[in-house]
Length: 298
View 1 (tube, rainbow, N blue to C red):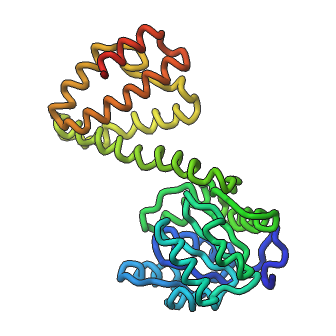
View 2: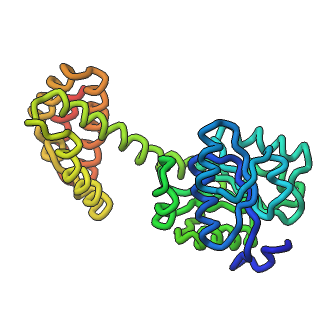
View 3: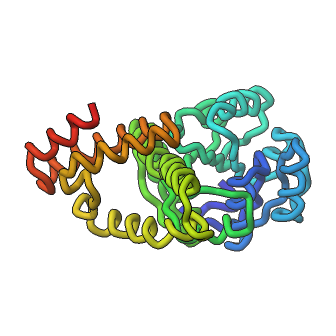
């Protein structure tokens, strides 16, 4: 190693970002704020070129192999299905050198996908920010409040990966190679389906008269409190007709939701079934009440 000889506290590194998407530019910018220097990036679309110019103004735009050839730390911030092909291409050109740090940000993959570059002497890391990205300036600031799933192949890798996460103000969480897909499934289930759930609720409210009050305004305090309660109090935060064992109310909900959108009603049915199971499991309702609700949902 050259400029990262002390793994617990990496020195100033030159960084390359492949590619200039939402995640890559946010993390690159965060590392610049920590004292590193993003010197090169790859960007193909007009949107990515604009993003690179706005967020990484000192970086030159180059093909991925040329980006790799200029830096101490190579960040591969590409979609999961593009990562293996990118790694194979970089390995075939010999773009990565011994001692170079190579990081990818895919949630479901560990360091195994980087093996072709590891064989060339690279130090492989999987650093996945448990955060959603919009492409706006707040993305970089949000990194400081989140956790990163960190996977490495040895203690040197763990030390370097954790230090790189701590430098942006985030919290490193060690995730074993074999657990990456399960880890990622949990995050996707929570974050992605939360958006679907909220937009479904908005759709239903927009089908009724609310006196001109936007659906989002009506939902915001309720959903914010529900999320906070769920994170603070676990299953004890369950409320509503299912958690009370009110089968008649559940049946009425299904009836009116079918009139709004039959597919949305099916989503309500699936979530209500899961809610009844959790409510019974945690002794919030009796087995008989849970069965009554589940019969309405069958």
